[in-house]
Amino acid sequence: MLLKSLYNSERFLKIIFGLSLFIVLVMGGFAYKYVKELSESFDEVQDAYQLHIELEKLLSALKDAESGKRAYIISKDSTFLEPLLVSGSELDNSLKRLKDLTKDQPEHQENIAELELKIDNSLKIFEKTLQLAQNNEVESAEFISAFREGRQTMNSVRFKVLEMTTHENELLGSKKARSSRSLSNAPMFVYYILIISLLILLLTYLQISKNLKILKEKNELLETFKESTTQSEIISKHGNWIWHIEDNTFEYSDNLYRLLGEEPQSFEPTLENFIAFTHPDDLDKLMEQVNKMMENEDLPFIHYRIIQKNGTIKHFKAYGKVLIDSDGHKKLLGTTADITDEIVNYRLIEERNLELERNNKELASFNYVASHDLQEPLRKIQTFISRLEEKEQDNLSSNGKVYIQRIKSSSGRMRSLIDDLLQFSRTNKSEEAFEDSNLNILLETAKHDLAEIISDKRARISSDSIPSMKVIPFQIKQLFLNLMSNSLKYSRENVAPVITISYSQTDISDLPKVKFSKHNRYHTITVKDNGIGFDQEYAEQIFTLFSRLHNKNEYSGTGIGLSICKKIVENHQGYIIAESHLNQGATFTVYLPITS
Image (cartoon, rainbow, N blue to C red):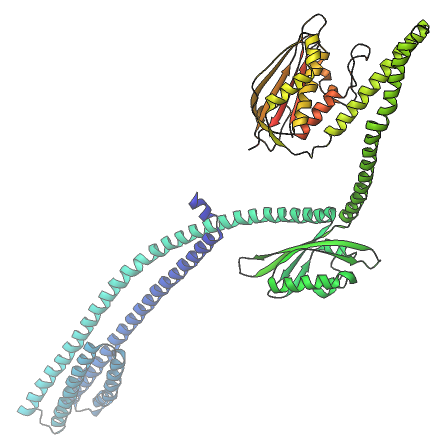
């Protein structure tokens, strides 16, 4: 994995490319070396050839001089002396060229110096024998001795030239063998280096080609992202800007110009041009924030207003954060959003909240009227009905007695309805303090309130031990009271009600229809009865305010009791569900969160 990531990295490609260039340079160096060696070998061969020629010229000049001298002795013809006259200058020139050719070869220099002495000695003998021959002393012992000495000297010169030629040939041969070995290995070495370089370059090319393809795809994604960002800026009404801190220059996105009511890039992106749109009342505040931004290289959230050229006032919110790029350059990336709609909506919400407060006060006044003013005339109606029944019973017709009973029943339902509405109103207020409460005591208190009806219906109620928890005590008591009252009310005819209250704990993952919650576990309280039950399709409807599944003549009630139960459970951030089948009883399950 590490090798793969290294292979795909830009640094690796740079290393490979540099290595390839280095290998090419090394190849060039070796090629230059071999070419130079070949050139030096050629120069050495050329110098050796010149050396041979000069030695041959030198030897030839000596031979011509000796031949001319012999011919002159025999024929006495002076024309044969011309080679001898010319040979002097030729010998000097040859010796000079030999010295130049072997100036970097000490051994040859020594041989040339020795050869020069022999030639000088030979020329002196030539002059001596020539002088004796011109004096007709050819037969003299001196001439014969000098002639023999000249022949020996000439032979020593010839042997010296041969020795120098042989030595040069040996040097040339060894150099040739060494150059041959070097030059014979050079093509194979260069070939291998070339193959390796080509393979490395090919590998680099393939990776660069792959990276170019990826770069092209990323560029296309960037273009798409750029367009998406532009659309996002337009939809969300915000614009982006960049402050290059070191250069003190700015860049504005197209939509920032649109927020100012201008065409994109219609003016130079400078701080002065932007501030020119600022509302006069917010100018000092904005300049203070900008100066802090320049000083601290940071921009916390700021709010200000701008005025477009058409006079429209907009509310802006801006934020900036410093980033440092890979080259160490600092830049502050900023976002400016048009929050005019938010401000307008906020003010509208404030107005509506004020209206809700007024309505709440009116509702509170209504509650007061319902609990006092409405109750008082209702009590008087019920009092007068009772008096009519007591004192005028015998004077009433049969229809009158029926009407009295109906008025009495209606006034009783109205009183129950007012009491339940007041109870629901109290339950809607969840700001009461939570207290560590013993739910077993609250349950027993609720049972005590229902003692008369429990006794009349010969009901049996059993319950598990419920742990203490933080609740609103009177609301939990009301919860138990309403659930048990509901079970007692809807019991089957001629069947004693049996109510079972059980306790357990449930994980959030096991709660039905609950996908998210800030609590992980819940207290689970189940109230199960053996009453008439209901069809499961009405399991949600029964918790709706004033919802009734039965006619008021069949079962009394206002349809508020279970709504109060649901509101109490919601006040405790819990859930309540109902499960039932007709004539098979009903089960109400309450989930209250376990808090630390």
